[in-house]
Length: 386
Figure 1 (cartoon, rainbow, N blue to C red):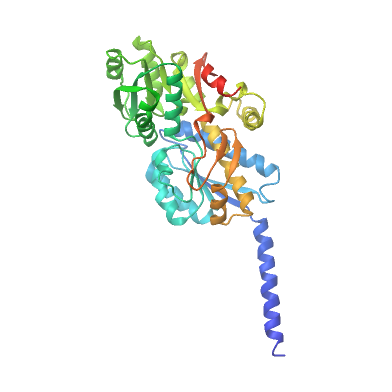
Figure 2: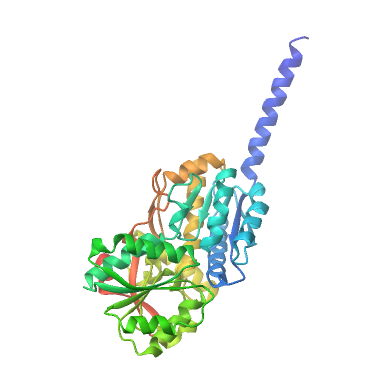
């Protein structure tokens, strides 16, 4: 009789453990998303959110990840860093992983909290500071600002453009990192920067920039900025009489830029995710990944997926692949799975590692021209994807 009690207790514990394991297997995978649905960065955030929801919908329709559905909880950071912090604190205890804001300043405000909570965080903004130095649980989806900068320099070298004016938003971490990336590597590609012009996100008048560029020997103007200033600068540039090329970045690779900029954007050069010009890619694994998103997104929303949709969809695919590889949602195991992940998405082929939490190289940045309100790859980019 003395031995019966311990045996029954052991059996009860075993049954309880089995029951919990079964329950865990049926539990949803809880993913939080911090996104800018209102405020200055809502044009980015709304496209992020559409594509994240679309990716979750498609994964769930196919049976989920390891038989578990993804349950998405969304919080609006209102394009404000302090609101991103509040959103993170609302989501952290009830989430297995978090998809971060497209606004660089919001993302940077949440990273100390990610470090403390040790929760897998997939960021949809390209600021270099998120992964330099490495933060163990932070993984970036868009190509970094510095990677965009190097891709632009590679294009400029191929086009034999050596004197480049730069205008950048001093209040945007993305823009500052892009400018610094160009500064750091310009000499390597035979490029001299100048004049260098500064503006702020709230600026509406840019005539002084055009005057300075006109009186210089610059052969092109590179713009680093997001949101409304890019549209205003593009329209002002077209009206200024300047004939040298205007260069833009992935933040403008969207109909949300093309539509308000209108014909003023025609002729501009723009770097973007390769997925933005996916219709021009040769058949293969990358084009298949791009076509999956393009078909589903266009069917649902009536227009092709812009840059920010490429990022959101890719982020969910990366996170789902890591959870599958980890065999569940244990945070440390998912983190380790991300760090050893190689995956082709609409943004290109990611290769994360212990020393690289950004995963994309310049190979997956397309340099395009804007023609009739559409993105068309330059010969420089076509040559890379033959």
